Length: 348
Image 1 (cartoon, rainbow, N blue to C red):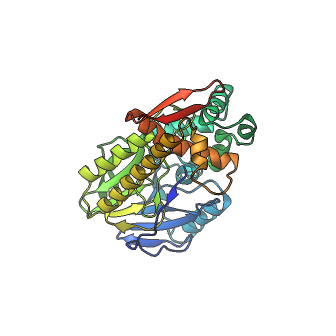
Image 2: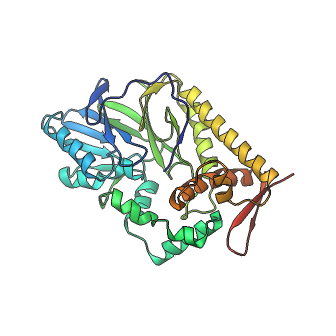
Image 3: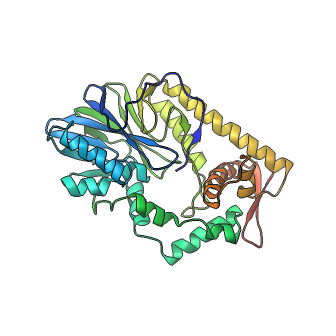
C-alpha cells in the first residue's frame, strides 16, 4: 500500500480543506478525508444524480472519516441519501467505510471480483495457514526471526481499518459501461497496485477516475505479498501504463485518489515508467556489484536511517517487485538458502 514520493508537479490544483466539498467539474464533488498515518489524506468523489448522490471510495474506518461523512449528510447532501457506492480497490483508505455506509443506507455496492474477495479474505482474520505463509514470506525476504516477531499481522491491521464489507456486491468488469452522475463511463481494470483496481473513463467529457494507479505526486506502491509470493506485480503495473496510453487520450482531466486533479496523463505515465526503469537498473547494479543480496539487504541500501521491522518489510516487498521483474526478464538469478532467505545476483 505504500507509495514513493517524487517531485511536486506544477500542473495540479490547490486542494480543499478536509471535509470541505468542492465541485471540481459540473456534477462531481471532490472531498478530501484525513488518514491516520504518514500519508495523511484520500480523495473521494461524489456524483450528483437525480435521486441522490453516488459515491466513489470512502476513507478508512475511523472516527475522523465517519465524522466528515456525517457532516456531509447533515449539510451538503441536503437530505438526499447516497444512491450507490463504488469501491476502486481493496485498500482500507478506499473501502474502509464501505460496510458502514452500506449499513446506513442499504445502497448497492460495486467492486471488482478480485478486490472484493481479497478484502473479504483479509477481513476474515488470520488463520494458521495465513500466518505460516506470512512467516515464510518474511524469511524469503531475508528478515530474522526476532524481526518477524515484531511485525503486526497484516490481516489484524486490515481489520482495524475497515468495517465489514457488504455480504454481496455488484461486479465491475473491464469493458463495461457504467452510468454514474448522468455520465457514461467505461470500466478499466488494472493490476500491480491491487489485483483488479478500477479506473473509470468518460470519453464524452474527457474525465478519468484513476484511483491509485496514476497519481500526480507519488509512485503507487507495487509490492509482492505473502498471498502471491512469486508474483510479478511490476510487470502487471507497467503493462497497465501501456494500456492506458493506448486507450485513454492525453487530454483527459485526471481525478486521482491522492493529491489534486491534474492534466497531462501521458507525460505522467512516462514519468512513472521511467521511475521504475531507473529503480530496476539501480537494483540490478547492486546485485552485480554485491552478488547474493536479499530483498531486505537491498532495501536497507536505499535508506540512510534504520527502519523498523514493519517498515522494512514493506520496503523489501516493494524491492522484491523490482527483483521479480528483473528475474522474469532474465537479468537476475535467485538462490534459496538453508534459512529460507532468497539471494539475488546479476547475470553477467
